[in-house]
Length: 439
Image 1 (spheres, rainbow, N blue to C red):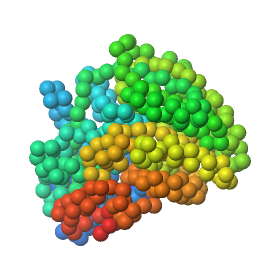
Image 2 (image 1 turned 180 degrees about the horizontal axis):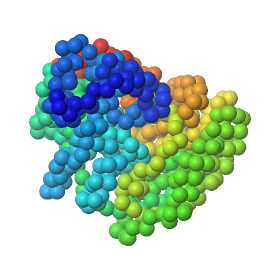
Image 3 (image 1 turned 180 degrees about the vertical axis):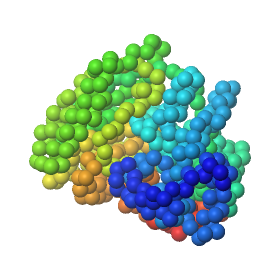
Image 4 (image 1 turned 60 degrees about the horizontal axis):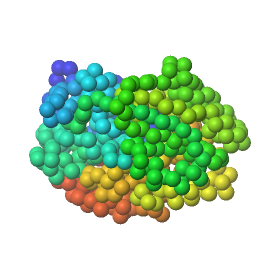
């Protein structure tokens, strides 16, 4: 095993600092052959295996006390097929690098989330998504994937090849094997016009369905302790690129969204009584703006303020009622919430454990500044979400278990039966998967 690296540094932490793991071995395979050898050796040694991305999950989905596989040497675009409209990319490639490489080739993903620090495999395996009327999560854009299974063999999966594995493994939680490569649908690069506009809570909730219907990508943020929201509408443009000016872009994206917001969060954590006043200032600081640019520059933004997050997918028709319940709960409680609540949408898709599996969905995401006690807030929000049959994001904080999840995912049994077939000895298991999938 020539290029394979085994490191002595054995403490792994996720981005938010909520999860720490101390694996027996940390390995960075430089090829698929080295990866399969690593998996086989771990099985021989009686050690469990988890692949990790950049640690952007808030849950312990990637934590292990066995062999931790880092994919930092398994990166890069392997093949571009313009005729088929696909690109095949190594699993450890960060989305940031993929987006810039595709743009150089005059290509783009159709839709993406708002952070691009994650690896391709990490983002897809946990169901990372943006917002979209017609276009779904990154996993829904997968056209094929390669999976190293528990016996060390490489399984190629697509709608034509091993279709029953493909139906589940696009959002596989790392439970079915280690993804080594992903083939994604791409299209010629296009322009998006972003229109950001403050709007009152009452207006945006009353007009929610109309905004979703009229825009390709609609989302909004509500600032707790205020009646203020910020809306964002992204639509394809036939016009010329008109990115934000350097100064105005820096003020909005760096100063207000990162620098000043970081300062406000720090003050709010130290003196919670200041949070409602800070929320009113924050919610009024962002002004309306319109700009046009290539997709990844519109969909994604830098996130330097560290936080913890819970997000639930609800049937779309239930979302606004649930959001109003969250607002009422905060208003009658002693909670002080410094982060805005984010609302996005997705069309139904056909992936077994997708949060939008079989139903048109809306997402409600709640955040708190890292280091702020979050359990009472998240527990109260989770109670509201589960009353509406909510499905938690697999990479974000939640307390649900297999008994609950099997009731909100019609194809849950299909996934666990496939897991029993591909990984009967739970080589890829950990405590998180035992909780959410059962044993």
